[in-house]
Length: 69
Image (cartoon, rainbow, N blue to C red):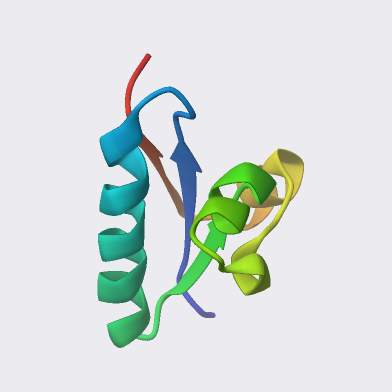
């Protein structure tokens, strides 16, 4: 079974996108599959990682929320 991590990015936190990009890079180097919401994936030009929140919730073993509230 492959490892899957979901990433949710707070739209109102500018630094959250930078952190998301770095985390995705780190995870992919370790062959861990990443899923991100449509908004986050679009903002970092990674449409290949986009999944809706329901799919992320079902498939991800870990969900990382960036930017708090």
